[in-house]
Length: 297
Length: 314
Image (cartoon, rainbow over the protein chains, first blue to last red):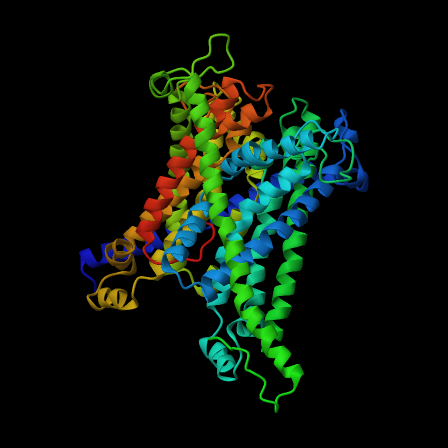
């Protein structure tokens, strides 16, 4: 039926399909191997004592509580700082701005900030926040001698997630149908009223996407917090924003860099806790988003 | 749209008058508040760049620009310190090039598969898996590199050093696969369907249509995907800090320990180099260089994309 040339082309076509399928499955394999190797190494160490314990020189007695608490505080604090600024910027850009130069400047800056490597935020954090806090502490004659404190970590992370929040919120606002806003104006509502009661409400579930991404990002970042002073051996829980602190990834990093083999198991256990925390916090936000999206109509 | 408070004409109650006044106040106050908060973004950007430039300037008052760019040794913590950035650049290029040789084939093929070949149920399973991969903290990739990849390489090539560039490259390659895939797929799916059907009408096979029509049409988007993935890889810190070692040797051998730009920053931030020393200020010079490289790549990448994208992974 087919000529020799046609048959060849069909064979090549089919072979390529198979190769494509096989190569595309490699990401599944990679994920499975990474997760599998970590769970097989560390799962036995994830016990209640590990979750509620403090770091120790003995790998088998090391716990992760200060890092877990530190991470949760940094997530909460950074969101508290970044959300008002990020949401305001996004709403301003989408709904209120009328000076083109100003809008384009902010938009370009946001896009470029989003691409800055996270360690550069760490450098900025240590050059600006840590230094400024140190000067403030000295002038207030406080007993704290360093600016490498929890507050510096929170401020640094809030800047890091700012572009994520702005961009996702802008995208969320863009999904609001134009006729909803026009109907609101037709009823005599002002711009602020329309933005607050129509646009923001309709966009809210999608705005949560930015929140989900931000939470995962904050929990997973190591390098910037290393630079602003998160330490690998903190044996107390933070009581205020002006003390030394640690977070999950930094704690894990310090365990990985220990020469003793047993600490590698502890590190794997720490990674399991980190991944589960990420899953839990993002999961709550994802469920919240799904519920709100259903209720929207 | 502005609602001005009307003068009371007697028929209107004072409550509704007050309400109108409140609305009109909000109408002027809210935009001012928003603009004030949005200005913070500008201030942060300026502050970030200025703090890098200011501290780099201090570094270059201690070390000459010529030394930084022409010396081939990087030994800030030695008795006779040398500050040639060349070995760090070599280390960075070596690790990133290795990562690309892994991520570009896998990422591109996956993108083509997802956009052209995969049945929708399979695409729907693969997409979340790629999203999970891109959400895994980089410290996890670092741990995976040193615990799984390094022993594996050492079993294959026994003379491999414990800390080596190859291990970091492979882990980093896995890390940037989702970036290459997601942006390339956007470019491939945006190729108009008529182009494909036109190809089939001429009797081409699926592979011929993909190779000869779809891929060339999406070339600029695919280039953008690779450029942005490179930018991300250059800025990655933890994988190299854990697996690549800290030997600024300017060696092109992937089985030896190397130091990258980010690796030096991570090292100094934990070392005992006290603030105010030249070794400490070197961190800012390296940071500024890193910032400029990634900024340039991002600007080029964004130009290639041309259209607006909401992809925050960029």
